[in-house]
Amino acid sequence: MTQGWKITVLVLGAAGIVSTPLVWLLNGPDGGEAVGASIQAAVGAAALVWALFQPPEGRTEDQAAGTGEARATGGGTAVSGIRRRMGRGGGSARAGNTGSATADGTGSRAVSGIEYTS
View 1 (cartoon, rainbow, N blue to C red):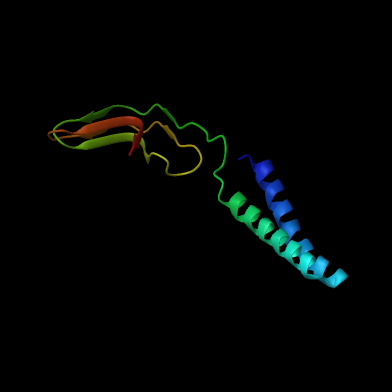
View 2: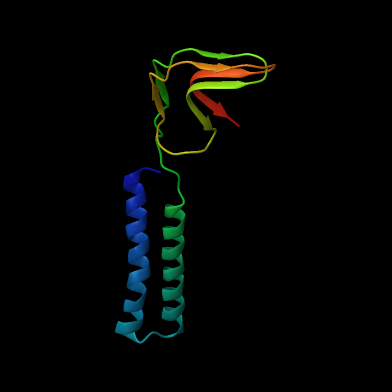
């Protein structure tokens, strides 16, 4: 959801919640008006909660430049740059001029740049 739509939904949800007491104060509501005002407040609150939990749209790609060499042997892990879990973190990640990464041992792993792990 874009930032503009998120703000629009939040403002409309807040307006729905705030306008509900006006029905009560201005009109001495009967049963139908009270039910309508309650539904209006519930929908406004639901819209607020829904908009708050929407992830941001258009996440920027991660970038690594000038990261140097990554070397791993025999069990170690070497990362020269960025290591990020899939689906974690917000915004973009950039790595530049990180230098070399070296790991030693059986089954080792070296990354020069950005690594996404599960």
